[in-house]
Length: 530
Image 1 (tube, rainbow, N blue to C red):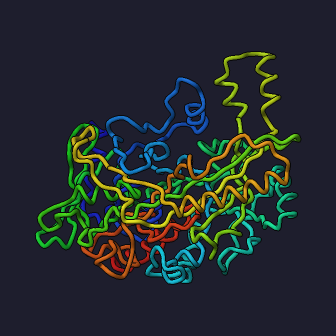
Image 2 (tube, rainbow, N blue to C red):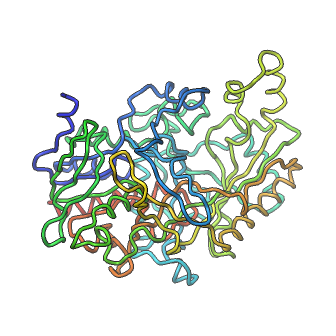
Image 3 (spheres, one colour):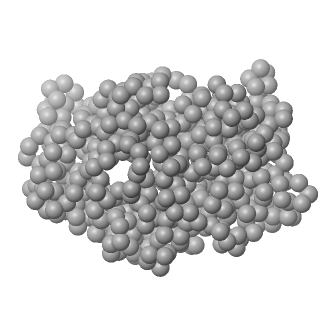
């Protein structure tokens, strides 16, 4: 009973935030720190277990993993030419998907904000790189980013990284030999993990299991911002599934978030301002479920584009065996990459090349899942481990209206609400960019004399699970959902935080941009509340 009382609504809330991932966590912390009465409603639980136990749940056969994803609560449907495995990488819970992310944090390039102006494709953002540049710097300090100013293709920056970059790995030095001969530029990867003690977290100690779990806590997760928000006075209610946003008679202001707790009770959380920060899929679902006479197509959807322009990054990769030690699995994250094929190239889609440090077989997982034991198993591991080498790439998917997130009204979750439907396909131009990435990867591996054993390319690619574009920002209310401040055009006190507001996705991992926009949103909202 006491547990459920802790999930009762907060009186006199200034701001209600839906979602406790990095966007919601940063906004909550910044607003609570400035004296606002903040409540955060999170659909999933708190994962308070030991990180080593979480890692064991991921790798040990017979265990289901620690994140409690799947089943009726997380049901979805997929349509379109390509199946979209929505639950393969998302997490509902305090911390969101940063609980098991890779931790790579790059700034978008200048061209990403002006793709239509430069190339006549995609869309322009209602702000440019210079507008976001100071917030990128703040976001790097918030997350704790280790990096170096050695990337000749990176956009300009005014401040050094908070921490020095991690050194290149042993396998990076092998790649460097080939890249120098081929004229390819390698440079460091900005990483949201501690190269030294930072923000109360320990430095990286080299477990090498960054994805799925960092046992030492050196890698950033949004749990840290949620904890800071609570320390500043915010109230965080977990397992509070927001099912609808209710508005006033005019339809111009949200007045309450209706949420259901594990005991089956539904509560109404009132507030002056509302921020939806529950990802590119669930944000759309919530707003569509909040349809009314005033908003018949879903809340904040007078434009009809809510849910449209769903984007992800596509993976291209190639790897095999090299007749020398590569030690590629000794580091659990990338330390080098190449942006040489990103800006103003043909095809227009950006390509970010990655020199992988975590590809190939893992001896721990192989041993746990092996059918052999003892000396026979040891011999197999000696033959397979440490001689593999692999490259990857993220490839940009341009926004298309026929890639969308909607509601499957024929399928319901365990509370009886329609589940999200992801309608997704991969166009020919994106496939051409994937082929281009494979060509560059093949040239590097061929230069090294690698016996290529696998390729992921146009015909067997998959998503990086970066959900972007479904509530795009823009100056025109007829073609966008939010303005440049991330406030919805239709509802004066409703804001959207996260990658759903991206008009284009580039080929960079989105979390740093999510964080920068969250810092900017918090600043705008704080000014309105003061």
